[in-house]
Image 1 (cartoon, rainbow, N blue to C red):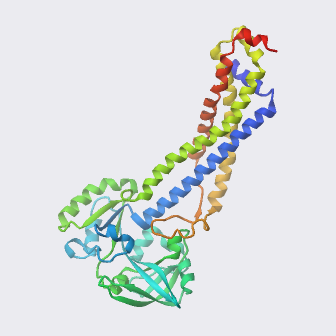
Image 2 (spheres, helix red, strand yellow):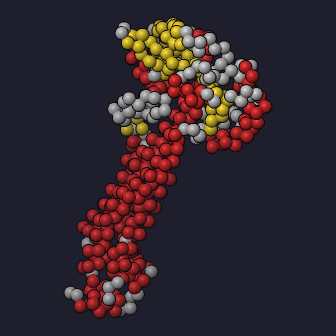
Image 3 (cartoon, rainbow, N blue to C red):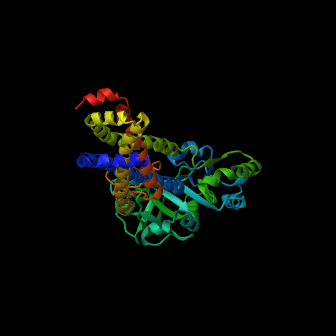
Length: 420
């Protein structure tokens, strides 16, 4: 086997240009796969993280009817505690469930600000500042001012939303909204903070206000639209569902509440798994395209060395050994090409994991709450990605080399020796 390996290396050195072209083709394909996989991983990870933080939590508690009316931001189907005892008592009972590390209350409602002859639409989130900061790290996104304090008539707005309503931090703004009883009201708040997020929806649509103030102006004492339950890890959320179901069966006599797991009833999460499978096939397809260059090269080598192959067979080299020889030649090209591509692809991925890729123009208009996608994506640089792409490249290239290798094996020694 060592003899065949040395012979394969020697044969490749005969035509350095042709070998170099094949190596470059494989390297370019691997660079594309490493970068594409890093980018797709970055897009999926960031979108998933935003989905958990701003949409689903690990488990979401809502009214069953609210699930159907959520897009309308209905305030008629809220959480008011077990048997109307208020959400404060409900939160305390949920915190006592083993595995629940945090409970994040939110009261979401639609609002507008009048600007001359137009109304600027927005969404208010009444939140507990302490819980929100602990879960979403929203304070890290505040680029000017500070976070809201409970009991204060103050709000924090996204940079894009502030630009729309032509306000700055320190200004006051009157927000118009509807209560659950159908009355249209207005309240004035002071803007005490500005956030900047790469998620257009958060940047251009959302403003935060203290939960107690949201409950006061909407005439919804101790009510929220949702409670997000946070565990030690989202993968462990399903394990505490039996305990939660037991609690709700005992306490929720009306049976009006629903528990939503982070990956259930959300179409976007289902698309993630499908997308990963599709992209895996695309990665293989990219490498196969590059293999056409290599296969052509090896076929040309077989044609040029027909007489030599016949001589090796006549001297006692078995068909299996000839198959190994040409497969090894392809494997060597695959190893070098994959190694170079992995290194250069890794460098490229590392660079864009820092600088990111701006999709702002492509994301215009995608501001709905279902699109928790960022306008700037960062590639994921990981050893797992590099190893995966290198191994994938070597395997696919080696398999592709079997085609010309089999052609060499099928040559009859006597016929091959006649060719000059």
